[in-house]
Amino acid sequence: STAASYGVFLLALLALLVTQGLGFTEVFLGAAMAALDLGGFASPFVAGMFADRAGPKPISLAGLGCVSAGAVLCGASPSLVPFVLGQFLLGAGLSMFGVMAYAWINETLGDRKGIYLGVYVMSIALGLGLAGLTVAVFLPLAPDWRTYYLVAGALALVPMAALAVFLPRGMGVPLRSKDLRKALRNRDVRWIAGLQFLVGFGWASYSWLPLYLAQVLGLDLRIAVVLFVASAAVWAASGVLFGRIADRGWARTLIVLGGLATGVAYAGVFVTGDVTLSAACLFAFAFFWPCGSVVSITFLGQRLGPKAQRTEVGLQENLFLLGEAMGAALAGILAESVGLSGALLVVAASGTFAAALLFFVAFGIGRDGTAATAPG
Image (cartoon, rainbow, N blue to C red; front, side, top):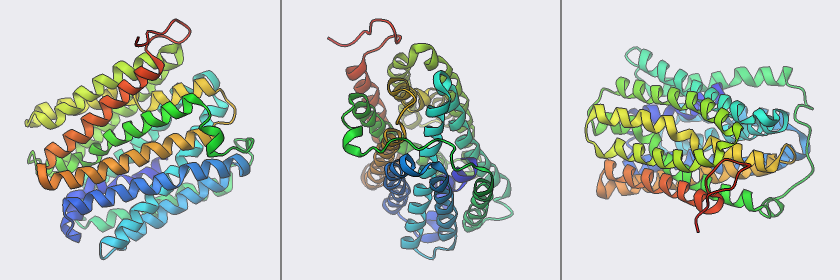
């Protein structure tokens, strides 16, 4: 996951340089970000169904292969169209691998799935951290943004080779065949899928943050990248913390109250207009963000139990990325008329607050195993 996410986060880190190098407007940048998410949207549910039948090894290898090919295509792109296609492949590859990771954890780790889902999120954050560190340190020596995509393409081949040799084909025993119709018969799956769409929609603003910090608040790009990476370290660590709390029965409380706190902090990033206050809000947002994202997957895993989860989890990833794609595209369009700050605020606040409220309506708030405090 660390190697795969390295290339996926590069557009967020290098958006300012990519837009200058390829002549993107904010609308086209939003389209490129949306392509990354649409690639992810296209792959997880299909990957989940194939894994239900064939096991995780071929899906994992295909995912890493897509990441490598997509990164190389982005690095070699002379124009918008091949760059967008490369972003699509990057998103598809990471999502294939993500479905397998979630499924392995849900199947094998039982009551401790929450903490290990947090560890998985930490591995993604490590990929972002590695990419950010590379950009921050080497940008003065290697200012061409294409270099970092080519490095990402080579990096993804390392775990691909390791998985081809060491991952047993039987790891994660194939489950009984399922399809979308059967998955959607479960009320919990439907509600959490809706929540994941809204969480993804709000999350779309996060990928614009280095550009926002550099272009609107006037920070040096390398400092903006460092802040962005530091915020990822915060949500990586808090994901493990909140996973442990969710394992003790507090998932519903975390999703509602933590989701509302996430929305307040997220909005603060874009309304303060001050570098220090925006950075403080960014770190507060990062701390609470796993409450609505990772903990909701933990909650669904607790409801479903260890059986037949690949297809359902693939659907959650699918809806998250569809929401993120729509949020990224809308942010680019709105930025042309209301400015980047206003566009990111609308997308961030609407998705994040709506997700917390939706979950409260569907499941209430309280400790699992006790009477829920539901509306009405």
